[in-house]
Length: 76
Image 1 (cartoon, rainbow, N blue to C red):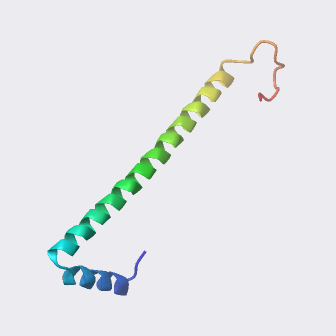
Image 2 (spheres, one colour; image 1 turned 135 degrees about the vertical axis):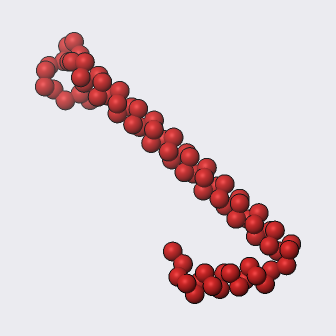
């Protein structure tokens, strides 16, 4: 997290930019934001799939032992 001096410096840099530079900076920021959003979305999708898998495992365990397995054995 930037401190107050870093933020002040960045604001001054933005204020000193002409319209073309400011537009380019905005486009760069939007692209970076889109990339962060995509990475977060991908990670969230993976987490949801893992939670679904774990819920399925719990459901199978609650349904009882699988025929041929000893009760109390740890599934592999």
